[in-house]
Amino acid sequence: MTTDNDEAAPETATEPLIGSSFRAANRVFGQVGLKLSLIYLLCTIPAIMAEIAMGPKAEGLGGIAMLMVLGGAGGSFASGGIVAATVNILRDDPGPENDFWRNCMRFFIPMFIAGLCLLGAMTVGLVLLIIPGFIVVSYFLFASPAIVIEGKGPLAALERSMALGRGRRFEVFWFLMAIVIIYAVVVVSGALLLAQGSASTIIVNGIAEAIFGAYTLMLSVAGYLILTGQQPHTATGDPGQGVIRNG
Image 1 (cartoon, rainbow, N blue to C red):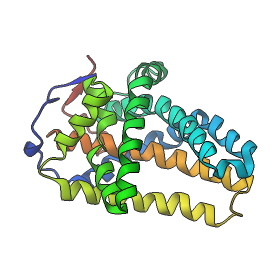
Image 2: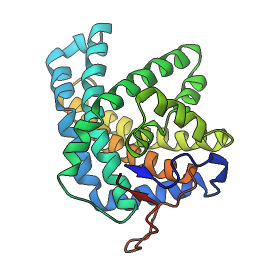
Image 3: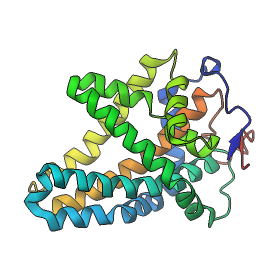
């Protein structure tokens, strides 16, 4: 995938980031949200089953590391397809159905490596203080669409994401905070309804995180389009301007 404005300077973006991104993501989620969330869930089932099987051991350092790798691998596999599907919907061109799984496989490795780099940077930030951890994450929010749309490698995509937010750091940070609030509502509230550590809690958490993961990727794509000076199409039936095309 390529764009007409792949290297557009972030300062050319004047669209309000938060409101416009959520409108665009809501449009995508309204069309294919449940389907993409289910696919995300299926890709992370190995991590869910492993957590249930491990029981109390899942709370140890080794268990946490194993679950993060399994969950990260599953989420990374689904991410390429979800990002590409979101891009196609926002340009009003769903594309061939079989492209989804091809994109999952094509972008799996760079998505996984970028995720590991982000996890490492976030961990360092959280060790220092919670706010630095959030700031680090905000720098890399748009790496996934950079991988899929621009075809960048994992490190180049992280660098591209940092460049896109330059000059709009405060807005990007609050964009992340809005995502964190959604996570708290969707995931944490679901866990509080059930006994902590039970199999039912793990399954509910897995479902909630799948929905959250898919929706966050949709937000990331919409934010990327805005920061590159492009206009995500939020009105159903709008033929669009063809801002993104397959390369």
